[in-house]
Image: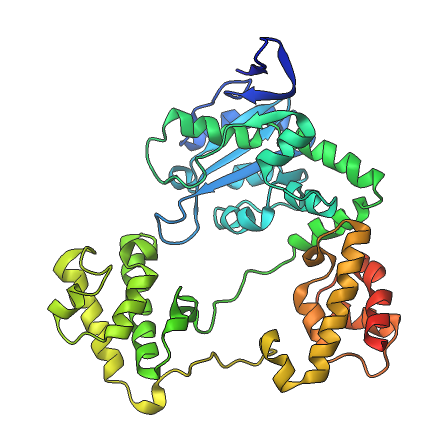
Length: 410
């Protein structure tokens, strides 16, 4: 069902339409394999791109698994799938094996879709398309309103999608996320073609399908918010010990780590280094978390850190084999810092000319590597080879190598 927005005079406003519910209605969430087979039949008889989306329970559950999968193909309808109840979504992947999947912000959804067995072979990312076209705001609702004239009801992105049963208004929200995705894709493809950027987009979409999962971080505890306040190695050891204790407990409870113990509580505990249960409970942010049992867990983590040998304590900065942070280049290698400034200035000019964000013109890591260690002989060809070696796509090399070579030569 849809409703046209009206202005104060009561006439239909031409600039937008408010979608109250999907025009086909909100389908029931599929939870049984037999229901899934029957629901997929209209899709096997249809062709064209298919829209996909997934809803997670970030901030509520441990990990980033999908708790609802939505898909839609114009002419065939919309499906809402419960990947927890269904468990095996192989029939879905088989049905759309040869089709183009349309996803908004694919880097967010591809990992959780892959976790439930849904891996596209062809992709169109509407958010990335909007970036390549130079749209300043590329959220789904913004692009739909700007290009299609519809206003999508938003505001439920951060709810707990592991809730069962899912409320009707949540299902409306979820279904609307795929309602106009294929139409948006068609509009964006036309604009990309007119701008001479369609091949760029296709290369980017193909690249997204080849990106391997991120390897586990060597020291994930260093991402604790507020850790910059902790300077003493022994206190850093407490942060590390608490982080792993929290992670283990969060995994056991299937709860987001921040709901078990907030980052600021970890930092405050590390600074206080409490020696007793009562002292642990007095730390801000700790006392209200899960009572005596949790307090004993945090005390044990603190005691473990306090008992570590000096040579095992963490350093203030993470040691790695990669490049140093760019804010330290001026001290470590001033020539590289100068090259990085020149390269970034050239990219800023190129970004403005092509109406493509700097971060989409070239992989930032490739730019840093080029500035840190440029080719012995600087030319467009040698710079292009260096960029390719660090993950740049061919279109990026074609539009950027010559300008970066000139920047380095200067």
